[in-house]
Length: 324
Image (cartoon, rainbow, N blue to C red):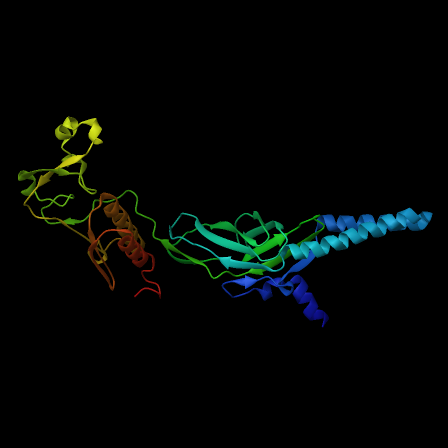
């Protein structure tokens, strides 16, 4: 029986939760005196000895009053942490080398405010203190460094409080069901995009550039060198400074294909993944539709957030069990 009590008191990490969200019941909250609490206990002993030696009634009253305040502080410290509901929030993908951001939400269904709740990862990172209002919630964002691509699972989280007097520290553990997708780090410096055909990066062939077809309104993705500056200068400022661009017809359209299999074989896998990551970002920045091939992932030419996310996810999970 004593062995079980000892493990529960001094080895609380064995009672960590595997649930995605959890309610911190009293059985999940642990408490021990803080340094200030041990010092306060020593002071109480000295006060009790002095009151006994000199038979001071007021000394006994002050000693027991201080002891009752310590007991009240112990109860309030536990209640400040107990019955909080913890849930995971957003965890946006990042590139390797960037800190992963994990959002932790604390919900307080009670009628009392919770103060100075400190939240941190058990393995690394700094403490983040927050207050949780009554019948409200608060969010804490914890950062974790990233070194390699793939899924990064959030480590165990420690919650701790010393409120209100700091004589005791109450804490609890929680294993959130959170993970962040880490994309490969883009290659630096960037290599030229693998354009195929006799066309320029703007999607117009050399023949097409010779066939001027007129002027039209500017559209997102039009190359800056095709802007008709003489016509723009003639437009009245009252018209809002409308942009117009030269329109060409004819010529072959270039194809942008990002194919992992055609990259130089002397490059290692991570370097090739980093190069394709840079190409995906570069193509999106230049508004160039691009096709994508990596293993069993074959995506037709496209643009946009969904296309970009699908390509970067395939690069991040290449070679892992989740890749298919």
